Image (cartoon, rainbow, N blue to C red; front, top):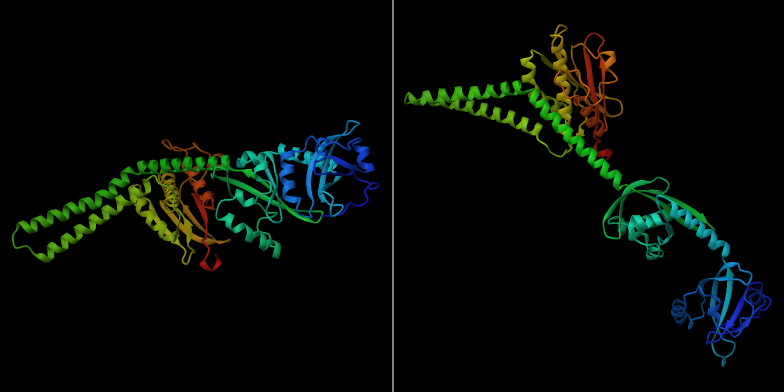
Length: 483
């Protein structure tokens, strides 16, 4: 316990009170602020103070030589509203004197009003704003943060910011803070990023978080501005689902247009199967068949049945509705497999497909079905373009691949058709615009969307002589040593 110092001339209000809570001594500054309070309960001078909370806190502190600070507001005799921090200290004047209370009033009116104004500004913000200290404890939690996370400010102020984090960020946050305090290396401060937070209900929330560091009066604090991305994510997912549905419709439309060539492709092995089966039966019916000839016929029958099965499997895989799955692939191999779907259509229309595929191209990370859809669409458009002018300028369709600058792989399909008319250039990729009699007008639009979602570019150019070239690029997959 401390002894009572000389307080009368001090410039700030000071009072002492006995165990019964009545004021027994005040200084001049206190008298000027609250005159005639000696003998009254000091708590009555501060009606805004929560007595129960103060008494509970006092019981914890009165056995220790340590102050307790409580906040209170009051109305002065001239009608001014003021805010004070009351620093309460157990006091003992002598060994036999009863324990008393020393109270020192610190005027924090301006600070409180500024904080209230700042809080009001924060609460009008659309985005959630949270401020933490350098130990990760929440100091400020605005209204938007309460609405976003489902906590009131009172429920979270003073608690760790990890309360709002899901795993694994919750477990790693302390190490992140320690690393920054030690090294100064910024991973998110001043940069911002998309991640997930945790609602009071345990639900995960997609957010965009921007963090800034604030140094004020020697204290280091961190302010986070948080934007809820739930609606944007839902919109992106709905758009992606719609695009996938359109892409599937496009594949089905392509397969419908290729019906004649598909039938031709399947009829070839089926006809061969029937022929080899009949030949085998005749050998058996003759009695004492030549087993070598029979085995050869059955082997050819088996080969043709596998060929028919492979054609059907490719068609089913291409036309199947499924979520895209990206794989590490050789683009040249993907193009060669694609031609097995298109070569029947090319033969029917007397179009020759040639390849000029560069060696040593890096692998690409892509959805094989979607990229095949893009390439097949370009091949069929090229065939249609040459048919439109009855192949008068030639019937060659060239598929090329090459590496281009910026670690990219380019695939191009060149035809000998009429090229793209100038008045069609701006409409070329517009959804539902088509120059075909029975076209949907979605093919090129879907293709460009697929390539863009793979991080590539889609375009075209009219050739110098005849025809046009449509091409797309895909980023090369990083080598393992670059990851």
